[in-house]
Amino acid sequence: MENENLQLIYTLLCDDVRIEMGNKISLMGIFQNIMVEKLPISLIKFAVVNHWRGAGNHQTEVRILSPNKNNLVVTSQPTSIELAPGGFTDNVSFFVNVVFPSAGTYWVQTLADTQLLEEFPLIVTDVGNMETIQATEEISETIN
Image 1 (tube, one colour):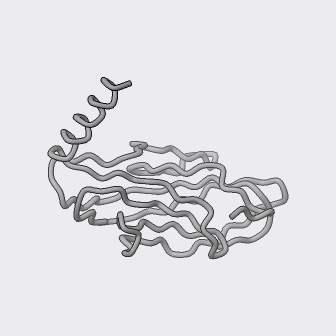
Image 2 (tube, helix red, strand yellow):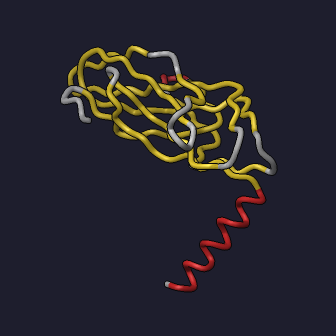
């Protein structure tokens, strides 16, 4: 659902974010999926960066759901953002010691003013599952 006064332009996942001089942000270790040697995995720290455009005061929140979407893996504290008309801002949500118990497609959700604005998949896999995924991709490439 799109809020007429607020647009989510992009969302990035990364290992860490630093605020530099001049209020610039530096993103370290941008990633789309999590591939590890062995599951379960506890990520010591990672961040979700949302880039917003719009106007007004809004409450935002980021949450990660289990593959079946029935369980909340982690949620951020609701954060207030304030935008001047036509302005933009970045909101960074840090997560610490998050456990992903098993392989699967988890769901990263961004909410604004309690409404779901974006949901995208975060694939978590280990070496054993990775070989299965690669075998499937090789078969599909052969067919195509």
